[in-house]
Length: 114
Length: 116
Image (cartoon, rainbow over all chains, first blue to last red; front, side, top):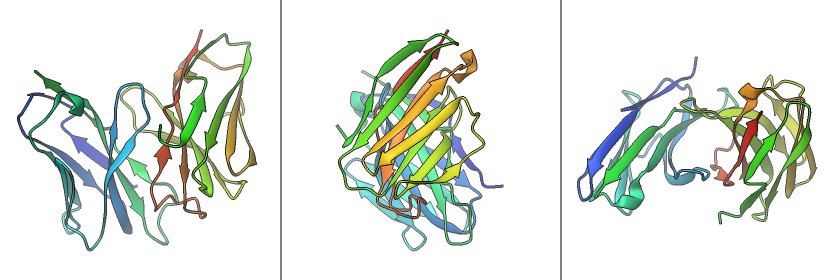
């Protein structure tokens, strides 16, 4: 069964600090992995996408890594800002022959305090 | 705005009411989706339309009825809902005509539905 597990479930940090969110998956065959940011009351917005051959992708202060061997990904946020407070969702899509439907994680809720 | 617009943003309805959610995309995408987001649960796929044809109906109760009149518009018709149907309903679109969304989703802001 395809699964995406995210940790921690929630995280509180002080403004300016760095943090790392984790995503483990069992989706097979693997096609790509995305990280989305979802602000409260809004829809998710894509931050990064990585395919099998990519092991790191940056988008401003957000850097995602992918280890396809261990089936793990992380999202590192540098110099956090109050606007980073949101839910971060890991989504893994299967390749040809795999499930039609992307598998979503439950998300990590990040709160950045001043 | 992301290019995917959902209305209304908030909806409160009784269990005997009939209402509809609307989604509109101006991105030229080929596929559109309805997702349900409940507290502390992953997003749940409800329906997929690719090139205006329904390609996925993920065991959704018949009290939810989708309609896709053209590639830019998607509706979710609701009738005789239950309180447990209260959730955030998200519409998304994708360039991927297969519906697999390997190109990624563009989500709307969602409709917060409360069934009383």
